Length: 279
Ligand SMILES: [Zn+2]
Image 1 (cartoon, rainbow, N blue to C red):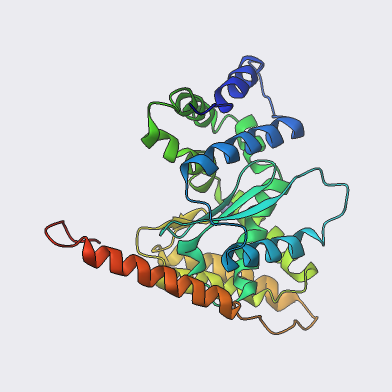
Image 2 (image 1 turned 180 degrees about the vertical axis):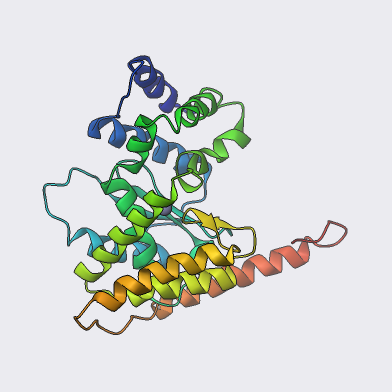
């Protein structure tokens, strides 16, 4: 039987929540994120750390982290989940996950750095803890508790854990803008080209699917995407320095993803006889 550590911690955590405003401490955020990450790794297909896609995501993550000052307490890890959705998220405290469904659309390391810088800014700015404190997300914690308690019997619910505390967290537009700003800054510090953030939004609007939610908005929502692009373009126009050229996604990553896509297609073809078509 597998051990579920999450509920014990969260129950203890929730019992200590006073009635008034309360922001989870740095230690609590890290603990919550690490417990949730542990749970996620059991539920989702995390790629081996030797997979070129894992190596790529780790390298971009390490380069972003290397620009941060030592005084930050967060503990980042970077992993890839095999999943068709366009998604990436950072759990409170630092565990960061990128989906293969996102990777397959990206053309440059700079575009990936844009997504990861955005997600890492949610961690660094304690967005989860702040929105919890503002009671926007009281229900959210309850959902996590409910999910975790039934972890052994209700697998379907547990599968949503990552989304519950990360991907679909209803951050405000203000917070999403803050994450774009922070990510933009991190890209420059790490010697990426911030144009990659604009390109990333354009690519995902085109490729991401009409009803796909990502980075706090619907990728099919043209005005919303254009607003984000306009904000970042205005910011970029203010920069006087010149930036290095964008770096293409390494060939080994593209090759490995292509092989995985082909394999999946073959499997889908095989399983087609009689079953309903995909969408
Ligand atoms: Zn965000």
